[in-house]
Length: 136
Image 1 (tube, rainbow, N blue to C red):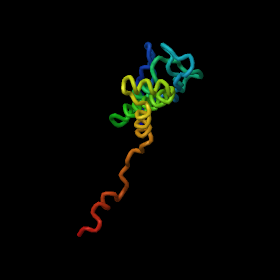
Image 2: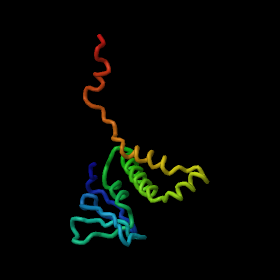
Image 3: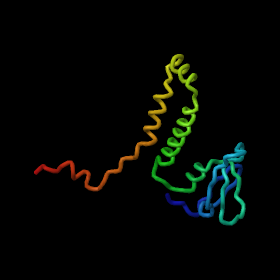
């Protein structure tokens, strides 16, 4: 990921800051709400700015990444949160969902966990060569 230097980044509610001045982004966990999503640490200030945009959207504006990488990470985060929520469903509610609407929470948990644990396939050097071994 490369930070685009000198780029003005919108932080929300009319606040802008130079991308190369931003040194840290921290999502607000407690007391999060309208206008309070992210703490932005900048080089020229001792205290962070409290801004209304999410850290992901700010980072997306600051950086240049290959097409789709931010979307893939956002989808991964969404799936992780969904998996955690599915884990909180009680056994009684699981049976009710399965019997009444055909929603099998166990199957969805396994599918999502499989997606999240699957390592991206990286072609190793020489892998293509192996396809042709033993042939003249």
